[in-house]
Length: 233
Image 1 (cartoon, rainbow, N blue to C red):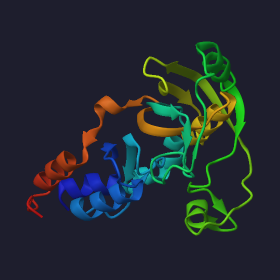
Image 2 (tube, rainbow, N blue to C red):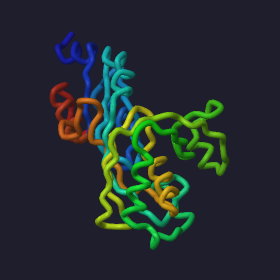
Image 3 (tube, one colour):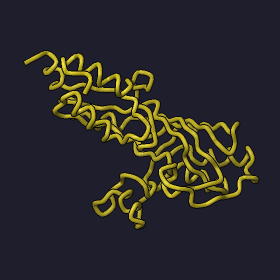
Image 4 (cartoon, one colour):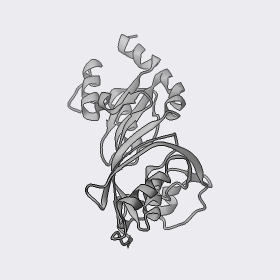
């Protein structure tokens, strides 16, 4: 058995910068096929329109995926006040417009504070949460509705920058299970308007940081070189 095969069996923790419009499962499947991993999974989904840190565990390391999923996460991004979409991001078309003229720095600050600490939120209808055994996004794409239970999450930091209003840049540190799109949706309501997420990037999971993650294409190239596989496939 080669040393490389032994490493793959024992398992690795891979840090990948997820590309825009790729699902987390797209990344897992691409690496599994290209790098000949027998067993691989990710530790926390990112939406297709989000980029940033994706932790993948291979081999025996897949046994500790839950440990990484439970860790604190940090995100940066931008949301825009005054319009909404059904998915709360740009996956779907705009469905309503709202006023923003009344929104002052004081309104923004009051809204921001309501999201600090332990809060309850309802996941977006366009999400991977299962209701009656089916992913919510599948119901949403068929135009169906569903009763979605609230969940308790914790926001330890929520910074906003309204320099480019009505676009709001933000940074959030939150617990496992937090839906940033839910925060954006509810922030719009708290500000007496509507909002949608335009940019999202996960910058940290626990002690793992995006700056240490590898570009997907570069990772696959390097791994195939290590495995002595063709690199032009």
